Length: 421
Image (cartoon, rainbow, N blue to C red):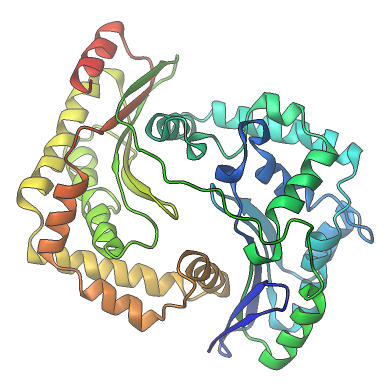
């Protein structure tokens, strides 16, 4: 059973009671991510996520780790370009202790100066780790190419220069500006007593305030860019991203785009996977994925290949894309894709953690709740003509973006640059 409660200070509480489960997951979602940072604040959202686990006025970092382990639960956090999330998953009987622990982190973290200096080194190592992971690095480079000078182009982890310069005052001011109650959603899914939970949440979060409440959201949509970016690096493979315009996360055609992505490269039965890996053995890793934001989105194809196969594989990728834009998909392919989408959806929502994620995203994106039956109906409503039209709208145009990373020769660079200029 779904319920929504807005506390007097503006914090939204969305819950789904599932008595058949033995677990419960609580997530605190802040509608602020890397796109909300100024260039001088690059990486602040992610750094703050780290600092919430470094001690409160009543618990040390070690105490926090020991308490969640003693409950046999999971507590973690993550930062995206549009949100920062802190969550805990425990057995239903441990919900009161879990709420006490998670709220202590969120409301009473110390942000000690020594811990900040120590955590700078941790985040710098995380940035270096991405630099050493070509799959992550090429996708960061590709986002920078596609988004141009827009805030969405910046890496979530930030830059070394901004991380080194962080102060305690910087972080607290950022929280005061961006963590206002109206931008916070608390999502809870699993087995719990609804009436008792609402009383507890009102007591814990009802008094939360910041001095910058009711700030206006300073977001604007990006103008997506095409073109080519090549970064030569001594690697065993060349890593490529080919990008196209997508749609916003809440767009009315999103289910047709999900189907298009699944057919193109979003599953092991997809056209790209079957043609390039299974049929020809040219790549181990090839897939497509969607990035959906509140006001825009992208479709990206990633592949890792030997340098001498770059032109051949790109030709195959574009051949499959041209087939979709010229002929669309047939009824059998659509039915298989719809069944795959529904199966993945239903299996993913069997855990309280997945249900919590869905609750929060529904609220942040649309301010409403979508039931499983509604989702199934939307998927079943996708038509061949709709997918064909979406393919023609998104996969054809002059803003195709290509990013390459690895041991590309000068000749290859020139050829690729000419092909996509």
